[in-house]
Length: 178
View 1 (cartoon, rainbow, N blue to C red):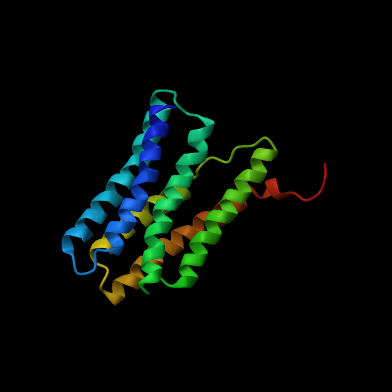
View 2: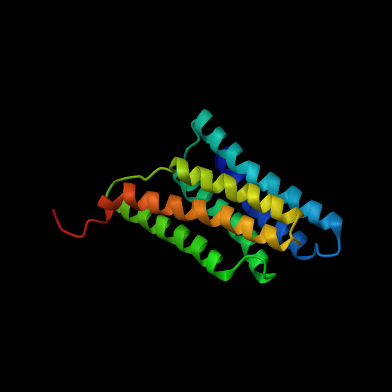
């Protein structure tokens, strides 16, 4: 197993620790800061494992599978808690999940046709803005107006990048046989 994949597995292992600390954080400021620290470190491992994989030629099929899955699990775990606490609307949560399933499905179809759909710029912006927004929200999650701002910061890039993936790769879904 490559170093990059080991770092990705560490990110996956950090998710339950983040969730536990964050779920127990109301009324305990130190747990809020602990959960923020875990979330930030886990988020940063996304950039570290990718850098190591490319720099040291450790790109693997396992890493290509696990890295985006780890990102989705980390982000969705935080969103699920905010949804449970009534701060993140269920409709927004469904938009995020739908985009992730749809783009993953599109990628699977593309692979079956011998094509790889790489992460686009808008997808990277979506991931970065979502992770930063969630970090802010972890610390300042009691402000109603902030809930709406963060919801928009998460949903708008999510929708944009999802639509862009489909527009740029619509030919993958060609229904006619050639």
